[in-house]
Image (cartoon, rainbow, N blue to C red; front, side, top):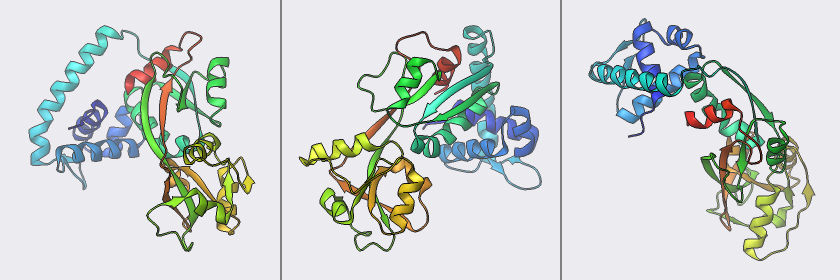
Length: 282
């Protein structure tokens, strides 16, 4: 079971406040963050804990869990009072690549909104190469690094995802189990969108092929537009699925390549206290 403290806080606040809206106000977050947290808690415990209706009241299962949830939160609050006498407050600048900004950060920010309600997380979007540069230069306080050679001290792996081909939904190979690089090159490979060029190069190395492409762009919106017009196909991380237009689909690739995403502060200077707070919250 992977029940989290934010889920417990959202559950208890909803019961105490009598509605998701009032619970969100009490916690200082958006209603969707509370709803998602409670729904996540229900998935973990295997049943509904709050009845949806005029008033949010606990179900029989919720009643059985409520006292335990309050006990856990009391212990957590006591622990935090000892180790963090000062409340985390202020603004922290966080950099991430487009697919992470779209596919992962919304979930992380919902978590931070509950655990660090007085911290404003400002997002800076860039490509793979810019992440470590911005971090070490002080442009940002924290970053989600893609496939770092060495995980910096204090950094934490926040996700892994895979590279996948993007083709039109009506493409003859859209229903194939997996596409090879040769399959993609027949249509013309559009490379570089969203800062994923390093991973595409690595896939060519694994396949023992020279890296080549028909088009090279910077923005994923440009890349998706070219694919929609039949001007090529591409490869992007699966976190980018949420960005796909309805007429495009993802298909697994051969060779298979996974990437690792690490939330970290800088390695050459002291971390901003709020960067540490972001990592600790995970």
